[in-house]
Length: 250
Ligand SMILES: Nc1ncnc2c1ncn2[C@@H]1O[C@H](COP(=O)(O)OP(=O)(O)OP(=O)(O)O)[C@@H](O)[C@H]1O
Image (cartoon, rainbow, N blue to C red; front, side, top):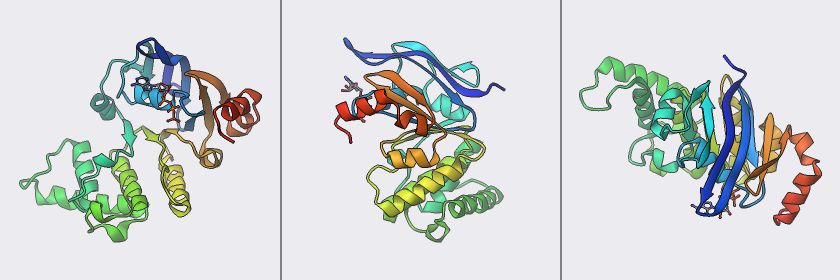
């Protein structure tokens, strides 16, 4: 097993003549929480979409566990264990919280979710799904439709459905965007706990969260890597301070 779970070389994405991400080399250490940060328009989302295979790179390679996944699709990399979370649409509003996690478990096992599913299978999945809900602190909401949950609780449910897939790598796009302080604290702790035994890559604007839970930080600016290291070192890097101030951030 290599020390790096993801290895990215020369990653480039052009939109017409515009280079949104240009020649990015990135190694994500197995078991780390890795943040992609940078001022507005730096190329974080584009980079994230390239990693999660929602965009195809113009050039460059992405290797996951030594396997070239540059041309693989999102469903195929998810089966390999690289899962993008926090797509609100991935939670089914009409199903209960418990059913949403049961569905994820059945997907993971390749079982169909239908009337004919054996009772023994359902009972096993029900028990396991309840444990996942408990681990994210929403066991008491198990029988509520997902559509009735608060924003913060929905995010907790999404973490539970992601954990049910037992991924090696979780990719999070601005996991706390639009949340109040209380939810931010709760979701930050959940991400920290969810990272035990796996790798997390996240785009995050909230630098307080980055400093609190991220082991490695990569700073992007104008589609290129400006700095990398732990938060304490990149936060005092003059180029980083300059890029943030120049980008209109304090
Ligand atoms: N589909 C597209 N077509 C053309 N240009 C694009 C496209 N997607 C992104 N860009 C441009 O690429 C640059 C990087 O955008 P990106 O969204 O990756 O930045 P970001 O760091 O995520 O910014 P923010 O923090 O504001 O979300 C921006 O200048 C953006 O306008």
